[in-house]
Image (cartoon, rainbow, N blue to C red; front, side, top):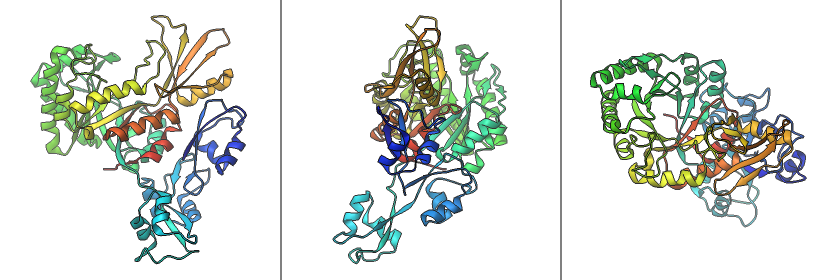
Length: 470
């Protein structure tokens, strides 16, 4: 897979010719509504011929496997597909092996170097007992380069059939699926979530569902609701009993605790609640994780940050999701949602307090459209990355890229003469984030939130990592 940035004069046909790939494959993987309309500065994912295949209408896994000379099981296993009948139009399949014809003078070592694999991998794939005994003209099966395995979480808020279908379509990329969210009463009751439809996508994709609980009350995070629970041990016992019952009833595999805007004076109460949660969950075989505000230092001030004790969470729970997004929040000034320089500041602190193998980095799947000049008290509109590109096309403006923030953006003027500034994510920006995950040696990534069309993210993720399945 390659990433191409559209230049002046580009056409999809010319791009496909330059990369020696099929134009329809580019259209499918990028979900292009109008292939004749490209925007200067737009990024495109380009599938590599003979290494990747984008599922088309009418395809089945058997026919695709036959085309590439592999078995259905090899193709399914290589792409984390639990049910071979579950493939979807636009899904990228990576081919587990491709062919290489040995040329005169080549050695197994030089071929391995060419394709970034080991001699042993080629030998095993081809049943070669003596690597020195190869001859020109022989066709070898070359395994694809190995990728690091990480854990991937995805939060989902749409508890309906469209949510189920999206979780089913993308499930091969996920370790965890986290329906958002269960609330809690001040008496320790568990406020119900209509999650049954969405949970139907977990089994067929071998995805582990996480029960996510929040201190949301009346539609927003409530410091008082958190205090009511965190200051009363008996209420905590009731809550955890209710959570355990719900997890067993619905088939959840772990608990994700997302308490936000907790009063600073409840910091140690929160830590003790986590200890109690782990003591109740672990003997039953459940994991416990938390969502943390993106702190850049231990003593960072503010209601969002002070009660989140990185050292304690790193010691107590199985893993954490650090919410490294929302710098460009809806009520603030125009800015990248997850500017990479700010994300790195958070990670620089986080890895000093929490083992890196316990950290999942938050990745946003959305963008925002602000009216400018920005006025205090006004709010940006949330847009999907796909919709953002369509906006740039509609208004005939070029897309720019901020190298410090590692984020695309553009400005346009609407039909009423109002100016706008849009920041969003694209293939380049998520590639930069995945490079960061590798650099810091993190456990994985967590997406907020499904339901926002960002077709480029999934092939880029797949090109970088293999999602662990538990």
